[in-house]
Image (tube, rainbow, N blue to C red; front, side, top):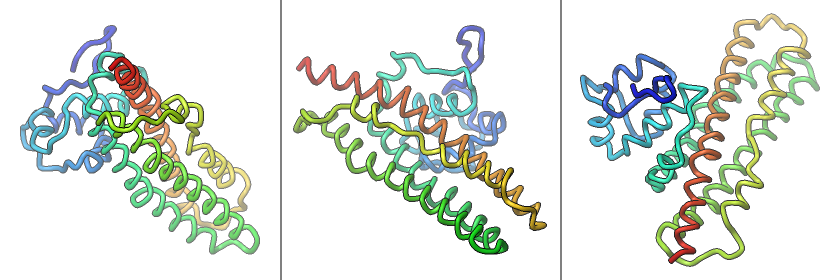
Length: 237
């Protein structure tokens, strides 16, 4: 680990196994980088090179997920491989929908089915609205923001009507409704004797909410400053 202001953060030269053992939640990041287990005694750099991943980007995101006081420097951000960052963000979108949100939907449906109308119906409708909100958020990034960034990277056609500041101004959090859902489950739904199921569901929601907050942080402190730097460079050409 490297020291920064007397604090220790991950570095590419440490062993991948030690990284995962230091914070088991980082296991959830591996598929988003196209990586897998069976890392042996390899360092982070060795594993990253084996999978065509930037060690610096991988370590940066692991640090964001592990240390609340970590923030990459502007120099570190400007050195990020933008295509790898976009690939990571796109894989994260798929991961959230398939591996996190759908299981919550199934758990919620199981619990909602034990409530009399209209409580169960309201619960499912509320979550259906949340899913649509997330889908709209991801679709905007995939179809508008990411293509803009790739065009900028390849010096293709400019978009005079669009820049990363537009994205920043409209960049909404997609975990706000999860806080509302937690309150509904904790405060307002009557007890129906499904303590284990409701507890597991709440753990899933808390975990997703925490993960999404870091996803938003990555876009705010890595993606947006990086693209802003790319815009400056493109205007100087």
